Amino acid sequence: MKKITLSVCAVAIVAFAGVNVRMNMSRENGKSSDLVLRNIKALGQSEGTPASSCARRVAPNAGTLEYRIFCDSRTDANTIYPCSTSSSWDYYAASNSDRCTK
Image (cartoon, rainbow, N blue to C red):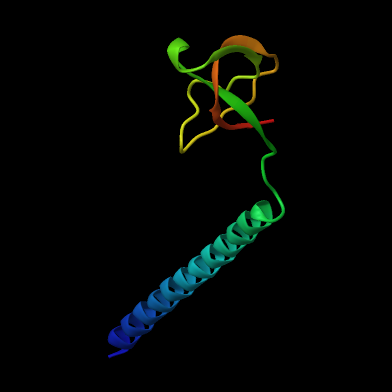
């Protein structure tokens, strides 16, 4: 009888320790995820990327040859790239401009 009682107590202690460790781990994970969320919110507030306008190149028969700051050729509806640091000659149509990052 003494062996059974001792075995039950040992199993109960091991189970209690396992539950305690699990609770501590989940509590720590919650703290770190809260910290990550607060950091993400802080980064997103009052921050942005300065932007400027740039000219998009057109085919020679669709525009006039002008000296302007042209957009990066990879700029599309989903992604913009840094503005060129210098102007260049190329074909441009007044209705064809886009945005670039400063």
